[in-house]
Each structure stands twice: as structure tokens, then as C-alpha cells.
Amino acid sequence: MKVRTIALNTFGTFLHNKVIVVLCLLFVCSFLMGLYSVLSFKSMTTPSNAQQMQSLMLDDVGKTMFLLSGLGSLLAAWAAAAAVADEMKSGTILAVMARPLRRWQFLTGKYLGVLMLMSVYALGMLGVMFLLTWLGGQPFRTPWWVLLAYPLVRYAIWAAISIFLVTLLNPAVVMGMVAVLLALIQLLVTASALSDIPSWFRLPLHLALPLTTVVLSETRFLTMTRASLERYPWTDHVAALAYGLDYALVWFLLAVAMFHYRSLSRD
Image 1 (spheres, rainbow, N blue to C red):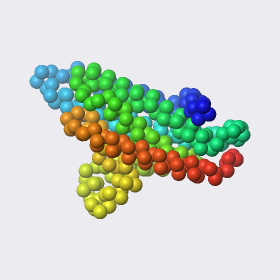
Image 2 (image 1 turned 90 degrees about the vertical axis):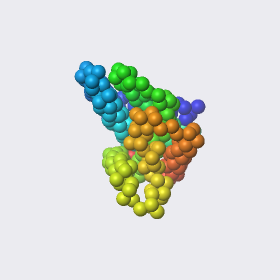
Image 3 (image 1 turned 45 degrees about the horizontal axis):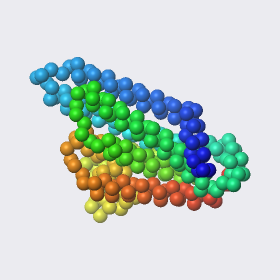
């Protein structure tokens, strides 16, 4: 009950966070740009160039979804950092912890509140993807649960990492580190970069950063969903998602351990 109350209160405070509101406005702007692109390609489509226009349209939809997915990672990181840091900066955490509430319960409630926000965001992404492909007159055969599960696991990872970092650092520094990690991961998942990495180093890299793996990476996942041709067995999905959740859990438990010994006074 205590954890649920904190989670709901945390989710409610996100509606008034200016940075999160700005990120949501960027989501709307990205959707409108994607919508304009799809409608433009559709208006230029003729029987003679239909195949070419279809390819260009799907490529633009993929770019829009890639942008929205990356924006979601930043949103998850910032929401998680702000959820904890704002309480400590304002000093309200002292009043909250004065109640019979354990520190792990407080942090769990904050984390669940972030996941609630990202669930809404992932549903919005799913709606955008279906709407753009439908308006473009393109069939979409990827199971809907795949489009929800993979982004949510990635966002759970970024939120857990951010909560761990914010127990040690300023939220602005945390966002800078997350942005650098995002850029590094996108660089590492390119085909040319992977070919240059020694084979003996790839496995440790994928274990340390599972978002660089071929299934959990945003680049590979969006390619898979756009093509809708490669069929992965359900065991591959379960293994990838389970590892991603386990990775997020490890970072969250590290955050709980660090938070247990951290001073709750204002910085």
C-alpha cells in the first residue's frame, strides 16, 4: 500500500515537471513531422512509383520511431533522476521518511511511478506507429506486445541506471552521462563498429551493456519491426527480455544499497 501510494503520487508530480512537459511536446512535434512526411509521400504516390514511395515512406516512419524511442530513453532517465532528486532538494523526503517507511519502499515507489509514466509513453509510441503506417496504407504484421515490451524493458534499464547515478550525482550530470551512453551505444551497434570490435571483447561488451545486443538495441529492434519479415522464436524474445529485466533489477538493487547509506539532508 505504501509503495503504491508513492508510485501514484510520483506519477502525478510528473504532470507538473517542466522538463518532462517539454519532452512530451517534443514527442508531439516528432509525431507531426512524421505525419507530414507520410501524407506528403502518399500524395506523391502514383502507380508507376508506388514501390519506391512505399520504401521511402517506411524509411521515414522508421526514422520518426527511432527519434521517439531515443527521446523515451531520455525521458525515463530524467524522470527517474528528478523523482528522487527533487524530494531531496526540497527537503520533503525528511517528512516522508519520518513515517514508518523503509528507504527501499520509497525508492521502489519512485521507480514504479517512472515505469507508469513510461508505460503511457510506450502506448503513445505504439499508437503513433500504427497510425502512421495505417495512413500510409501499409500493412503492419508485428505483434503489438513486441512494440510495448521491448521499449519498456529499455526504459526500465535507463530508469534504474539513472536512479543509481542520482544517489551519487546531480541530475544534470546524470543526464549528461546518459546522453553520452546513448550516443556510445548507437555508435557501437552499427555494423561497421561491430565488425571492428575484436570477437573476444564482444561478449563482455554485450554483458556490460545489453542495449548493444542485436535484439535489445533500438536500431536493430526498429529494423525488425519495420521489416516484419524476420521471425524470432518466442524463446529468443523471452531470453532477451528476461536478461534486460535482470540487468535493470541489478542496477536498481545497487541504487537501493547506495540510497540506504546516503544522507537525506539537502545538498
